[in-house]
Image (cartoon, rainbow, N blue to C red; front, side, top):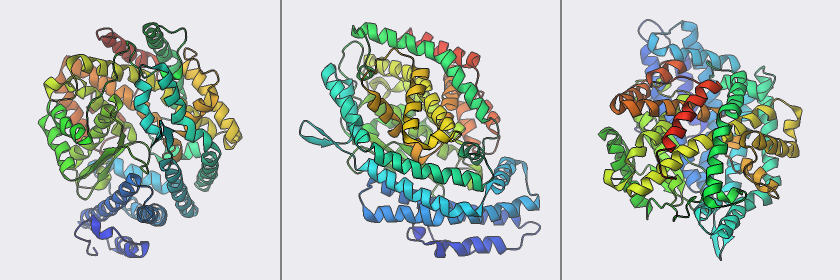
Length: 565
């Protein structure tokens, strides 16, 4: 093996010309008895270092999208290096598959390799380069968005706290401001999406698929469910979850004393209490998290404090920062990092718990020797994150080292559980729009996409919230969703994982210690077992039917009945 740098920083400024020799050596190295293991180890070390360098470049860019050097570094990895690296990986995957080398611990890895080989098309390499450039362009447009609020320049996410104000006029103004830049730049964003759409459909055709939906399902290694199962999931949400959503909204309307709910009435406290504020500063936000995690297991506190000490948390919202939140892994260092846009609201706590669940997954699976063994599909990765939200919920009060008084922690827990129910209609809407867009010619038409989004929102959300006169704001919600632009077809996983997480939570209600042990055992398996077995190890199963969904929704509603409204 060619000598690797001492750390991923050695690849920080690497070009494809610097990296190609490593792939060439791995491709040409003779493989015989006893040499495959060393070859795999060397390949894994190289990929770990390259992935880490790319992850750090992306992290630097999303933290400051206005920095030209950060933008160029991200583009170099995403559009110049990554598509060519994918092409070389397929050649190495083919070497392993053709050898017939598949020990039990690599069974799922080899299956994934075979799948990626089958869908690879050399013609797609330049298309992925173009898609990466468009993604960077989209991030730059969104990151530059600001609104004027009482003489100050703020970002759209910074309107979030004002949606919790008891003054209804303030909430309405904040709601309209939040979506104002998306409405103003709708044509620009839609134009970017059109270009992404065309490239994605061409990628699918080049790989031998009729449409990008079918390609994306294969590309994401979805061996255990199909697009038709996703349609079953949508129908189950409509049947099993929508009635519960309607009950929650009716309770909210009664508490607020309104004839009709408007969209700016959905985040305010229904009893006119002051908005929850979990922390005073980002340092305070970070400092209290370890105490929460220690109640689950001291190891989780140690993991989190290790990240904080390494400077791998960028949590506050600011101008120039890309939207959203995520956790990424640094596989060579065997550390995770967390990115989010905190604005001192209760939802920030939820986001931090969620991303910390991903981070703990990285730590728990770090013992696996090869990078290929550590990263399961998003369906299981999101079980790690969504379960953490629920497992940590009993410990977010000051008594347990957390953020809230006992009364406020009950409010926060109630909001967590309500949001779990409200999430399913949104999840179904996002997935259904993508299913429709990429399988019908009308999906290429921006106006048709907007109208389909309105139709889906009415289907999955019902009519208890009055959206009259707000079609543009309602349409802007899908432009606000990063997954359509950066992570196409990555969303149904959240719904499946929320159902998995609710099962982990249900188990914790009868035996907390065993539920946590099962959760950790599942995370430690990484990607070494098929998806149903990973869910089974966590004490859960995949659910697409209304019966299974209704059982969990009933459990949530039962728990909500014990909490103060």
